[in-house]
Image 1 (cartoon, one colour):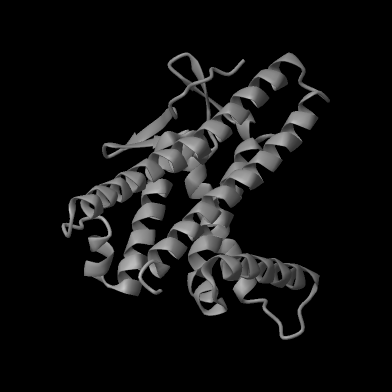
Image 2 (cartoon, rainbow, N blue to C red; image 1 turned 135 degrees about the vertical axis):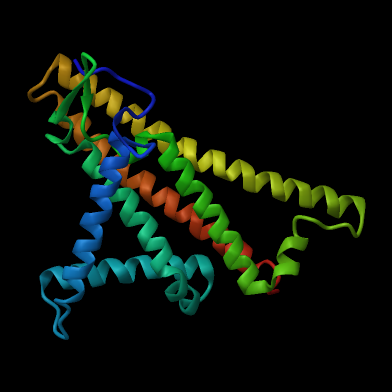
Length: 243
């Protein structure tokens, strides 16, 4: 049975940069999505085929959800690339991480079996980086929308003690959001990988199938939740002074 490690295992080192199995799969996902986007962009037709039609329907559905959250289609179209990128990247990472056969590539590192690929979201570094980017981008968009000083004034308000205390709570909530986003995604994906590893070891044939479909469903839900929390955060930061 493959060793279960909370920390992503190092595969090799390049000039002091540690290349782990989760980082390697992150690169694979990035290359796949970039290549896919390039190929799809060159095959867009005025009269859509089945695949293009399905993509357009999915895009319209996401835009509809974003419009109801942001309050206008203009904002939905403006922030769609960011939200869609977060959702698609996390979803693809989750799917590839539990795809049958991905974990079959094993390396021998000092007598220990190390999987060549590991789901990016099962590495806390990946989820923490995504959470930091999500919170930072939401605040930057808030500054661009309402102005730097009005946005910062939401956190540092010295008009009276109550406003100052509320501002500190708002600042703490942003820091807590980073922790919440990163650990929620990490915990669900890592727990799923551990479960599948144990099930495949104990009953390697038909028993893992229900758990595999369950983890696929969880992967979709976690990607959706992460994208929606980012969307709601952007909505709050860009609309708070617009009343």
